[in-house]
Length: 272
Image (cartoon, rainbow, N blue to C red; front, side, top):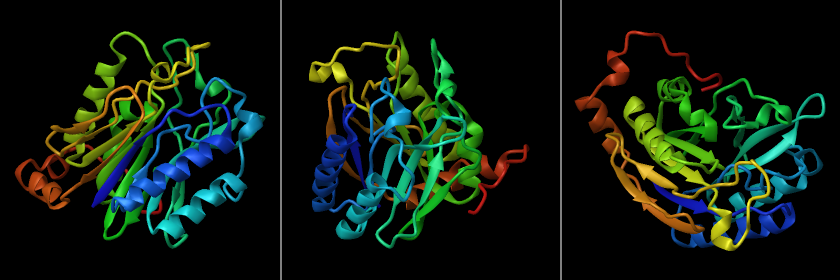
């Protein structure tokens, strides 16, 4: 599977961000990517009025991403915000496929940590999601989810060989190191490839933080089923395309059968 990691820096303007998504997706498709992964909040950066920009999954922002997926014959994963209940929004990953049979994932674990309360404005999701890209199953997760192994184990139990994590990781002392550690841990927990794609650091583009909102630190990476970092970007925006041999997952599970050896029940992702 050829996967593109699209590390961008979103602004407060969904229309401008959509144009950026389109250009990067075209570049990735031209390089042969089958799956193009954008960060959480690709639609609009945190620290803005999310309720004012949230659109339904059949709205124009998601609709254009679906058109791109069909036109370019790729699967695109991109973070957006959809309407929730009680004036809140949902932190949604749109999964747009070439055939139009994609899905979406609403972030389950909300980032009420490090002085930020995502639950003030965001309604949590309730179901794990896996999707098929070609002949292979991919599990999806969002940012803070990476601290919760159960979601990744559920996706692996549903057949996922690749775990995609889209993030807008909060900055702070030791946070980059935690991101790196957690991505490697989830790979080893599940013997999957972890494809972790975050927002780039806005400071690399001359944008200063004006709130405690998590706006990204970069360091998107691909981790092998044994926890080795295969590629990693820096803090600035970038695009990297990586070939994954998913036979390596079967080999890893034959050598280190942690999924088969575990003695606690793991739920299967609904609908998988």
